[in-house]
Length: 316
Image 1 (cartoon, rainbow, N blue to C red):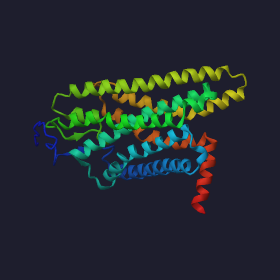
Image 2 (cartoon, one colour):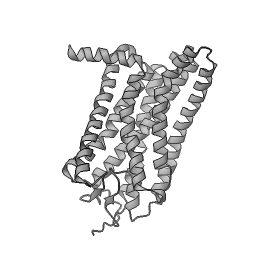
Image 3 (cartoon, rainbow, N blue to C red):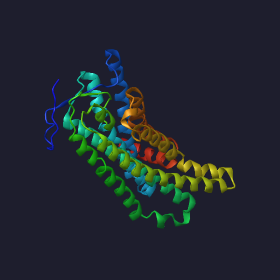
Image 4 (tube, rainbow, N blue to C red):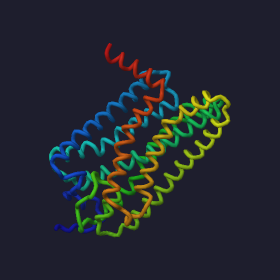
């Protein structure tokens, strides 16, 4: 076993390789996994890219809700692309190694996009709150400048927040083991195999995660409390159904995404269980990006119309 000494230099990890355990070592399951995840990846890319371009090419959809949805599509493409191509390569080549800095970069990019998505979902919840509870003031409260500010904040915080994790983890020693019991480089599996004191990283992970998640969650929760109370007061059942349909797809994505994120990251490393965590990670790393375009397309008539126009322009 090779031992790597701790060093304050960021270059000490050059040349170090990690071995990613992956999802399965069985040959038949590898080929089956490759086909399944390739299909999922194609659906994610095509579905989210189609939503992005359909909104881009239809000027009447250039409203805050759809601008947020465009950003959500980009985030889903980027953060699944940080994981699935490597996973597909592992399935087909049986080469499960990843360089030290490749692992740090994968972890950083995934965390950045996950953080940005949490904040963007909160912004979308606020947008639905304004649209349903204060429709007459919608254009004032959700002006282009205001909605752009929400989107820029989500991206900025998302890109900055995990940089501290990346710096601290890059300074750790991994002399005990270089086998990551996961299907990608994530914070908790990396901390689990480090022979350094990881308490500082865990504390920052918990504090930052609590601050961002709790802020976004409170904004989302309060928005939906007011939304539901407003919908209940609507006298006609048709009116209540129409109002709820405008936020049901977003609410579905919020429940899945927040639930899996909290289960994975808001707990100490000692409670880490590889098999359970791999399954939960699959939910928010793969299921949410697949569901987003499907849910928003099926439940949104304007997106359906935009898709028809988009297809007609492609075939023209």
